[in-house]
Length: 343
Image (cartoon, rainbow, N blue to C red; front, top):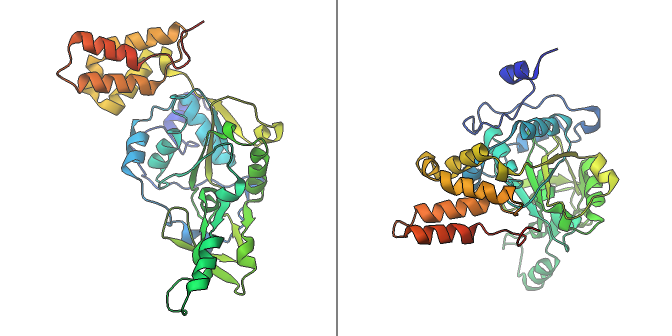
């Protein structure tokens, strides 16, 4: 049996290495899907639609290139890719939960991640598709003929989850952010769609035609929906984040892989790598005292986030007119505990 070191050298099962320098090369080839994730849509359709994904934005490229993945994170991302399971990522604010999907999307060349920020009013419907019934009614009332170019399907847009289920040969990346803020039933509703790998657009079924072209989320790209049904081919790369504010139903947890993000606050070396990746080697080499002070806050039990450290370092080194006293004061104020004074 190969040791973990041998596997790391051959990278035989690892699709994601946590190495931003790879950046989309070579193109990802997915291993065979397990029995519970066999494709629904035909391969030919998946090939046709695979390229219909957004280009990586500068913000995504920056976050993905700067992300510092631990060996545990790399392992669990690869497990999720192989098993076609959602990855539930739990951790305190500022530990890099949301940026993980950027790192994977950049390295594996999966295109701009789809994002669904969840709140207490979020519904599965909005994640799947949006139907502008009012806009359609107004258009019909004022239409003077068929030459205005608008059709009934123009008033339907797939949501982030609906777009993630569009057939593709490579997984479409989808972030479901802060799932613990959602209504308690949303988790199980979400699982039903993911397990089935399909959903129905009832408004299209009521129309006279057999198939319609609808827009993908945040895009002008269109895909054909036949008989009102969207069916996946490859399972999406689904990363679900949670701040740990409440627990999830056992059925939901059973179908997810789980990882708790490490708190970088007590790790000087990892913090130094994060600062270097974000702000450059020159600034990181001068910020040792600020990083050490930040670590001491974390060790003392204060709740601090990496974003605060980056803010403090960026400000004091980008403001040459600051006095030493001002710098020390700003660092202290920008790295104040997020939970008040430790007990």
